[in-house]
View 1 (cartoon, rainbow over the protein chains, first blue to last red):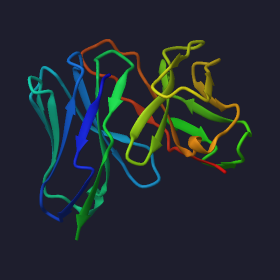
View 2 (cartoon, one colour; view 1 turned 45 degrees about the vertical axis):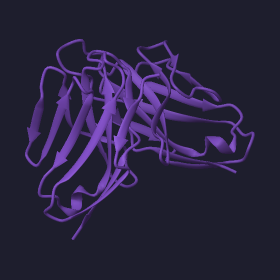
View 3 (cartoon, rainbow over the protein chains, first blue to last red; view 1 turned 90 degrees about the vertical axis):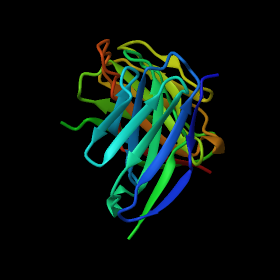
Length: 112
Length: 116
């Protein structure tokens, strides 16, 4: 069935370093790829998304890249700060549809 | 604007008891969802609704029922709770948007359910 694999499951970085989280999806019909951040005790919140007609998108310290041929997409966080510590989820879905498949999450720890 | 509101936030049930989780959204979204989150398994879709009066099964529907009598509300029911249903439950909603962007899913704060 449709699947989204996310790696790594945990990631520790020093404050100021960069963090990269990678996802691979199986459904070639997927054309929308959001990333969610979940802080402790809260629901996931959208932080950035990308559509299949775009290879890269940036928003301040966060960027997402997409390789549709390889079915890979990645989240890049530069100049990490302690408040970036959270669980991050990738997802894959179709534009205009209700259906999303989520990755299993990455727990990011930014060490001060 | 409260977004997506879930009640209760915490609940402990005994095996075999029943309960209903309530979800309300004030964004006039057509789509609503119930997910469960378990360690190492991410978010799994239990049931969803594409509009008032409609419901459909997701990945893990067994043991749950849902109803969407009003557009703003989506109820998740456990008829006979089992320890395997111990989890964090998230309600979510999104637009039915057929334009160039995907539908951002807005999540509630979660409901922690323990079945003993």
